[in-house]
Image 1: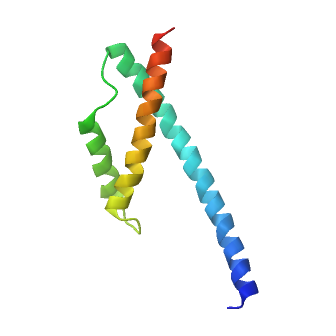
Image 2: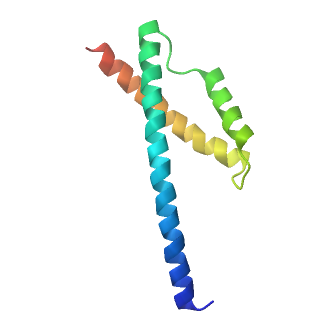
Length: 100
């Protein structure tokens, strides 16, 4: 493969990556909307934001459906970060909704 062919191939692949990234953003925003609804229910029921058993269930769910190439450990680390951000959103939402 020539350098020019490689550059063209990389450009094509980067277009695909950009599309995948945009779909990931849309899915994360969809997940956030659900998390906000969960936060409302928790606030109304005076339940805690942090539920370690539920988080473990999420990890089992995502690693259980994983067919690679991501390892289960890598996927768990990614979802630990996602869940941490979602938990923060719930806390903020619960505080702002509670102030109304």
